[in-house]
Image (tube, rainbow, N blue to C red; front, side):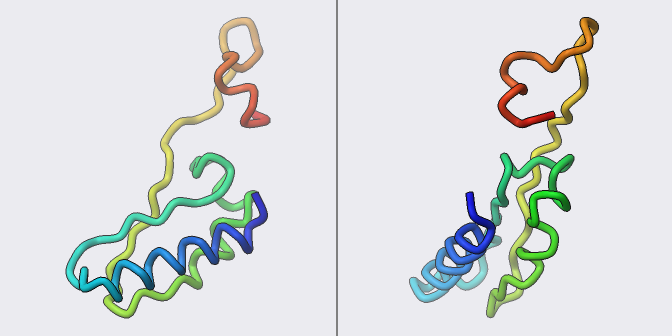
Length: 85
């Protein structure tokens, strides 16, 4: 997904949540490329999402801890092949 779209969707969600009156709740922001920690920088998430603005300064990044380790056969499991490990 285009990183600008990911940023804009997250910012619109933050704005909507805050304008609806939710002023004390933590907002978890999701990134691109399955929000994987292993692709956080290469996907553009790090450079883009750091610029999100929350007027209440209460957001956190939902980063998936799943790593893309090879199986004993040397290839990623089928479920992880789509992540381009």
